[in-house]
Length: 419
Image (cartoon, rainbow, N blue to C red; front, side, top):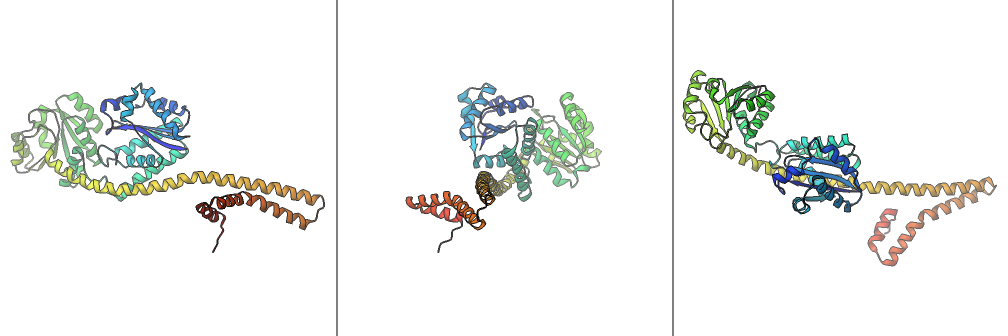
């Protein structure tokens, strides 16, 4: 039995190719069944995200990896040279380590990001439902989940903000001890703002407002987070209600000016406002920072936080790598023991067969009236001779070959102690 990982990711392939190699929810069940029907494939899990597509397989033989590669190419109707140039492959110990690193976020675009673990668990569940997961691969994925949990517990891999969206929310959390009691105005409705909203929800923020140029997109985002909706033109009306403003649009000109914030502060009786501008070009006029009770941070300010935190994550990642190597070695010890378990079972079966044959022969002799003492003597001699015959031959051959290493192994195995 051999473990294989075959895949592409953000480091090896363009977005265009990753899109063509992806397995969406509609394709994955059929793909799992097809792959399981391939000769030599015993188990499989397909992990497919925006940044990677990976096939995890338990194979009958290492040479079957070519079968998997050919299947992937044929399934997506890809050019062989184009795909091969972007593919990476891991087997055995390297495959085990790779999955553990992916589960811990060490192979992600954003170092230490936690979302990948949920995506791996989803892929694991999908394979279970398809009946393509059992035995060795199931044990490996379960082990990887526990390793990821250990890394999160014993290191600070996920403690520091390393994305602009996360950094913006982390900054707000520093300033407001309880974000759950604040009202947040989000300006824009793109991917970054959506991610900010998710981080805010994780911090128990329930009062959100979304302002966008088109109401349709704002309403789609607001519906998920139960937020109020407004157009950009309505911001002056709603701004006095906001404790925090986080803005990220594609506007070429500032949307929030110094005068607008000044009027909002007056209406708030100078209760402070935190403004985080993560847009390039800027959404908020720099002069806003001149106002008392208005605290403006830009993407450059956040970048400084991110760089410091990224260094902290790199140190945590080094700790995580050590944990992964330790856990990989433990799994490999179990993996190697599988062969010994089969050998032990076969050896015991063989010895039991010899015992039963000799016992039957002895009982027959006793039934025919032969002397019991003599029968027992013959039983023990024959049993001993048959059980030691193969080890004796091995010792003799090792002696003839002058193989001292084999002699030492056989001596330890047979419990022979020589001064």
